[in-house]
Image (cartoon, protein in one colour):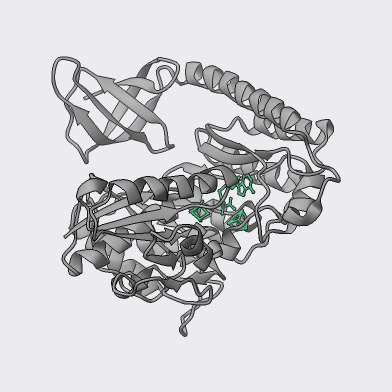
Length: 434
Ligand code: SAH
Ligand code: SF4
Ligand code: F3S
């Protein structure tokens, strides 16, 4: 039997898809890239912004038209969590709906027509999923599920439920299995990774995120540890110092800013101010001069004035982010700001202009930083090699930069010293220094 799976949204969804593929393999399913030949079609959905969610129903219609007559369609993930039965009502070709908090039930639900499993208090934090990974040298690993924050704009707590940490021994045994299968770099996943250890569903010794990093870095074979997303509020000194001093922890970090204005941060309920954020980011830069810092920014949140937006640009300029994901605010159901009505609403035109200003200012910063990189050395994990006339090798530096090494066939999985020779505007170009 064949399984076709489409994965939208964040790394958490990618990992959930891997989990479902693993469980379904036990039931005799093999993956296919062609929905027309599949016996089971899964869409693992995202609902963080409105646009991709709107496209869901036209996509279901397309699959319903091309699928084999007996093939089933299942809608999983975050949109499944918050729309539930409504999905089947709107799209009767859907056979079942499985929420983001319930994916360990995939093997049962495929046999139950019109079933809806979206219980938000369901806890699979101790469930050991069957392994199915397109194992290479990098792997995703969950360390917590859900989110306890109540950011005013965000639907995720409603789709993924309360935050529960995965027990340490489970994480370590999974990480060891991965190391034994050749994985060198782990990406630890959670909505607030650095809040690890605050709640477990079974009795558990006290541990925090810095402690978890120390434990994982003891595992032989795991050479690099990354994580996403940490929350700026929980970036205490212990965390920053562990991050800076642990040699296996890669020196790139995602620090979601959302807004640079303390007033807007307050109405977003982020729990930190502009000053706290800058203090943490600048401390990181002083501990690790070439640290890579990425961020998420929302423009056009209700009440955002030109003055507030200037604070966001100010933080952008002071931190000089290496990566920026920027979005126009999208009102989402089940969130606090959804009900705020017209007062303080930022027009689409102003929001689009702010987004363009933010992105072009960021591009200038990147151009400037890339020039400074020329001549510098990076430890690069070789991840991808292309043979042939235009051969090259490619990988990421410790601080998260994608570096291309033209004319060289290097060994995938090796960590090598690469010197930056030029900057072609996008990725950095380097050469292997033997
Ligand atoms: N846990 C992560 C975020 C997960 S959602 C954190 O706290 O940063 C990923 C990103 O989507 C967020 O960082 C935010 O920038 C964006 N986002 C979430 N809700 C949004 C909304 N309603 N409109 C626009 N962007 C949104
Ligand atoms: Fe959403 Fe905030 Fe939780 Fe991140 S921390 S998932 S933005 S509620
Ligand atoms: Fe991720 Fe989208 Fe859900 S960003 S947590 S898949 S709403």
